[in-house]
Image (cartoon, rainbow, N blue to C red):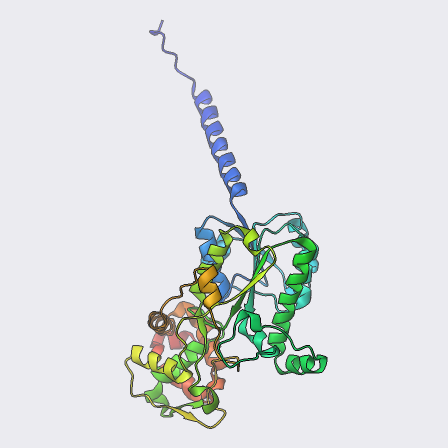
Length: 395
């Protein structure tokens, strides 16, 4: 006898170990299923990547639908962590292979960064109907450009009402097709809300600034200042926009609001709500470049307001800033200070100009520099200041 102690044979211990591992795997799968589900249209650009990152950190299981273009470093930071479906919404969601498998899924929230046409909104509801808890639509302050704004103050949410006269409506729509299409999407959301009862929020954004911006607008203005000693030309801004106040918004602030909306009771938005978002400060374009010059420690770079056209990258609207008091009251909107954002972006784009991992973006920015009317000179100056000998050899 062995004192009553029985030794398990090795095979039995192995079986127990396998059972424990299997239980652990089941727990992980259960956790994944119980995680809140987010459906994101886009999710790979300036706004989308920042939002997806916050959703992931907040415990969401995220499904992204986009064309598969992973901008900046989103292919590293976002792509491996989401369920990605490749689809071009301009060609119809229903034509994409993986959509059928998703069509019966339920989502706690859908965030739409890439809805630019009415039919794209219709398709989402044709497929998912009422299986979406809250629909968050990224709209634009351009909607006010096609409406009857009856005052000279900052645009309020209630100003987004089209003219009754059909001819005037058509005239406004031709003047700003982007604003027209964005408002059509909002109107379609209202219709689908009445049909399926899905709560929705439209976030009307002015020009968005932030790191990893594919429009390169901030980066180009910053380089016009930074490379001035090598360009030898004043920065000329169009007089019509130079000293007018404008609205801007930080991509990270928008992402924060979207994440907060995802944690709220959707019934709060049962019949749909629209909100303007923007910085509290409303600088003129001239003042914005002054802030850039200060952060770059180049206060003496000459910026002048002259005759048209000048270098006009901001703003993209004509009716001035937006009023954000409704978002402040109902969404606790409290954006970053503009001065802090300017400092952050100047540091980021200065670093991006030297980072070999962003070579594709550097080339894209320089190819877009024709809007600054000195593309060739800027490319030469950029290469001289930022690219090392080894990097130039590789290029």
